[in-house]
Image 1 (spheres, rainbow, N blue to C red):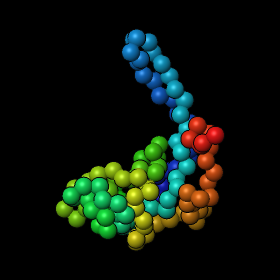
Image 2: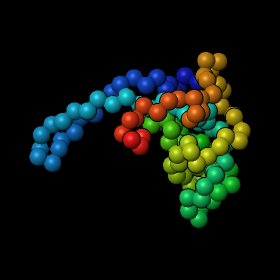
Image 3: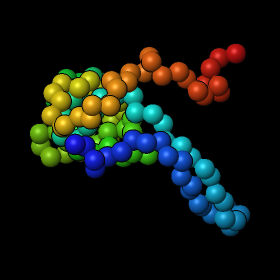
Image 4: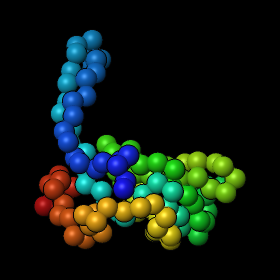
Length: 120
């Protein structure tokens, strides 16, 4: 069904050159997807971002990068696009086909794995 996007959390390596000119490598793991939206779905913006993207606007999800699954590229009715966090939207109409194995994950059912974000 939805074979074009896979949110598999496979680790990948980022190579870059630091300020001293040395080649560096970082191993990264994509975060888990914390929402049910897919490309072509309709979402409602819950927070004002700008004059073109106001709270309550209905937007269309254009794409979701598998390496940044919780950031969505959305488009308004005038063809303008922006990026939003999954915290700033709620799904209105599910248009894209779903996989049977896709769980409706929310932020509450996935534990925080970043200890540095927690208060002592």
